[in-house]
Image 1 (cartoon, rainbow, N blue to C red):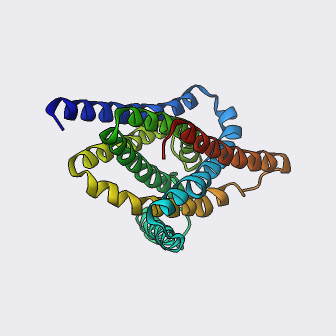
Image 2: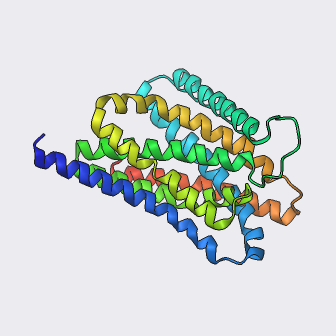
Image 3: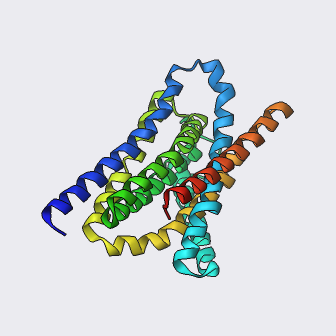
Length: 263
C-alpha cells in the first residue's frame, strides 16, 4: 500500500467513524420534547431498544459469527460467555452503585440498567469501528457501503438507547452527552484495526458472539423488567408493538446490507 493509499484509507475510515458517532446525536430530539410527552414515549423507546438489541443479536451478530467460525456450537458458547460476562459486569456496577446488591437503591437516581446500556453501546460501537476500518482497507466502495448499512442500523438503536438512559434516571441533556461519548468508541475501533490489521479482524470473529450475548443479557435482564412496572393494557400492547418494530427494523437492515453487498 502506497502512502497515498494509506492516507485515503485512514482519512476515509476515520471520517466514516466520526459520521457514525454523529448519528448518535439524533437522540438530541428529546431535548425539545415536553416532560409529559417523554413519560409516555420513553417506555416505547425502551421497548424499541429491546427489539433492536434482540434483532441485532439473533439476526445479525450470531449468524455472521456462525458464518465466520463455521460452528453454531462454538458461537453459542461464546454468546453464553458474553451473557455471563455482562452479568458479572452488572454485578460490579451494582456493587459500586450500592455496595450491597441486596439493599434498596440509594439516593442516586441513575439505575444500573442505564450504566449497562452504556457499556453495551460502547462495545457495539467499537465493533462497528473494526467493521468500518476492515471494509475500507479492503475496498473504499465496500467501506462506504458498510458505513451506510451501519448508519441505517444506528438510527433506531440510538433512539432506543436514549430512551433506556432516560428510563434509567439520566437527565435528557446528560443522556445525549453520554450516548455521544459511547458512540465515539467507534474511533478507537477504527484506529486499532488500521494499526494491527489482521489481528483485529480475527478478534472480531469472537467479539461478535460475545457482543450478542451481552445484547441478549441487557435486553432480557434490564430492559424487559423495566417495562413490567404497572402499565395499562393499552400501554403494554404498544410496547409489544415497539419490540416488534425494533426487530423488523433490524431485519430491514439485514436486507439493506444484502442489497449493498455488505457481509
